[in-house]
Length: 77
Image (cartoon, rainbow, N blue to C red; front, side):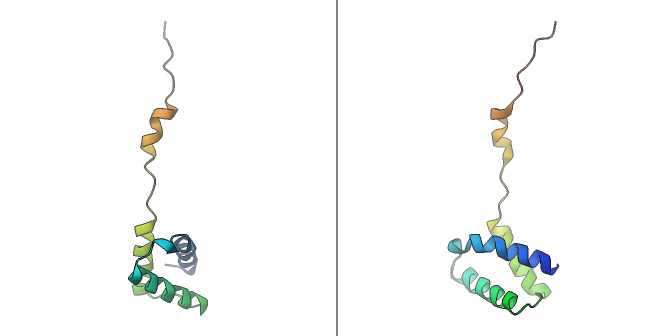
């Protein structure tokens, strides 16, 4: 993983910080301190950050909106 991914994950998680439980909040504070020191995360730390990101970044199921955007059937002669 790159430094760029690390920054992207931390920026997203800042928006979700109010949803964290105690352990997640402690880990997040540790990530921010490491980021402030301009350290690139090791593989174990990056794995923890990625798992936290995946937990809160749930993709939207867009199939439920298909009913609103269906094309009208045209009459064929």
